[in-house]
Length: 462
Image (cartoon, rainbow, N blue to C red; front, side, top):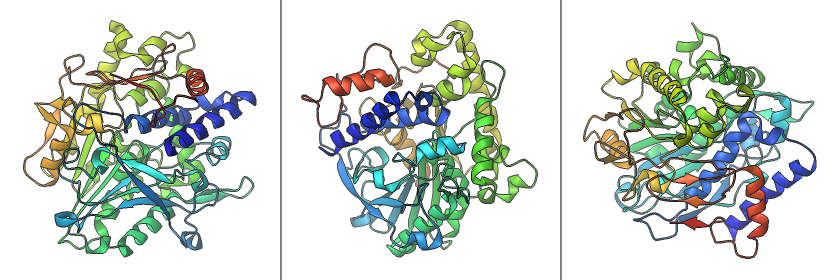
């Protein structure tokens, strides 16, 4: 029932925007990521070939008193987190995951965002499924299942960074304060006694885990083993298909509006402008703490929203390729291969350090540590016959050096690619996972299936 309510909230928000004549919800950069995050939330609780149990649902805790230090969401409400306590050998180990979900770059976008779960704790789900790297089952999450596992909710719109406000619009840009308040609260909850700790995050949360990695290390004594994981956080300052810089322009708005420069490391700010320092390609080599980059070389969010967004494709030449990688023509594939090369170039210095780790696969994916089917299942994506969970575990526990870089597309047949379709609205889990969606189809499917909706909110087809 909880998940049906979450779906209802999303669809009724959509209905409100449709009825009001607003179309910016699915055209703005941050909202396309919102749709993707929504779909992946449900993908995370999908059945897989090796997982039959329902995921653990973990309750929300609001950080009481955080407002006294100004640590509040965009709308002024309290920030929050979900914590499942560790046990046995994991009782003194902590995994902190920073939630993702796009950014907001203008007053208008941030005003809209504060009416969603990405800007107000009033709209947070009261429970979240803990899957993938957050799972409590050894067969799903072999190395971290019995750790203290935390998901810190994202409600600031700038990757837990920045510190400003807009009184006229009643907007509070307090990402840095939320980060600090959450860490202080968790330390008091027992994290100060950790012997092992891992900071992780996906998408905007993956960027945040890079920005805050060294700060996280400084919370603990040197005797504590501390490392960081960024999943789908390697956003590149790449040229789009029209020759413009869609993501750079967007990030510029985020950084200036929310005064993100206050949170960025001096090692970058001292020689580059703040917008450039919000791009992880200019940050990762200077991170002192061991860091693991998990990313697709053909990140589907960057393809859809940065490289070939509709604003850069007025004639729709890239429409089919954006929706389904199998529909890309040879010149489009060549463009994407060049993007892959840019990503590999951007991490050359980073990868030369023995303490760092890599898993860069050739899938059309985004956020692979949160979803059970991509993190650790019988048919999960692999590089060199090793799954993502195994690679991250081997790196964290120093069992092996992990610098796994896949061969170029289309060589990898283990991928779970995300496919968006204008006609069909279902989710198919097979060797190539398809998450098909459009705004109107999501609305139609919801209305048609009100009487027969499953516990996950979507029909899963094997």
